[in-house]
Length: 476
Image (cartoon, rainbow, N blue to C red; front, side, top):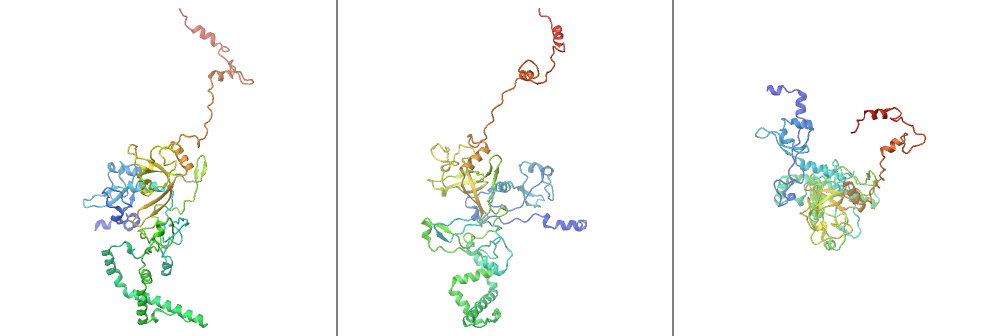
């Protein structure tokens, strides 16, 4: 009690404030996102704990803003001051922490790419000439969560947050448990929802008949004005139309949309391009957090990079990627490269940036065809990042393209790896070395006299030459 009384009201308010508290960890990624070959020491697909940092002076003292100081011998070995606190007070009475440089450095490297986060691509039909448009997750009509019931129905194919689950991602047992605990107790509320829909449809029919007959518009029918017989008949109609019934259930429970089946599956193998349509999250489900995941807040990549010598550049600077999985038989679908700590599919085709022997020589094989174990770090190529998408499982998927030829040479020059002089400033001609006698001659020393130059007195004029001769020792 004495300890509780010693705390001031302001101190108690700050102690209970969320501003000075570490947020609770979020659930780890599901096993489907990790895969069957995951290790215990692997880097998770997304961070689950808040990363904290401190200054260099406070780091040496072990001050991380926590309840107790952390040992400086263990926390000063890493280059960057990044920690994740697993538990402030463990059962042993110590602070359980670990290094968080894996996700912290990955975030820094991703932000150096300067690419926007876009919504996933939707594929509902096929066309031969359908351009791909990049749509940011920060558009005004999609990046909104506070909306009314009517807006929820209108923006169902654009919004990312839903109150209900995504049924395609639920297992059999999980689905039955959700039906028993959540859906069945809402049967009476669902009947009231159907009465409102029925009253709206009856009102529209009455208004259409009045317009056709030239009569005045009748008043709107309320949900309380419908009878039980009309509701039962309406339920029979919905049961015979499963698509309409699922639409009603989805509106009532605010379910995430599902992907519609392909009408023509053979069109996928005929070389046609997918046409955008439907919800972008219907194929793999909505994201568990904001679609940007806090990685980047750029709405577009339409900006110019300024080179210190060449000025504004048409293309962004390419980045270096490591070949992780080579392609087999020249198939680009098997290629995997590592970009800024993320694994992504590599670009298709061959260019100067990924050719093993350069632009003029063709050695046996290309960089994408094999893993070079003799080279430190393996084979590396330059790629052009285009966009990034955060999947429903929290994975970051980066789309890359081939590096532009001029942008590749400029990047090589900045790294000091380009030996050509195509993009180099011409070296200045070396100035001839000036001799000491030339400098002395300009001032009346007898060498290369310049008209009008000031003349300096010599040792002979001061009588020093005779003094030096007298002081010189006689040679025997």
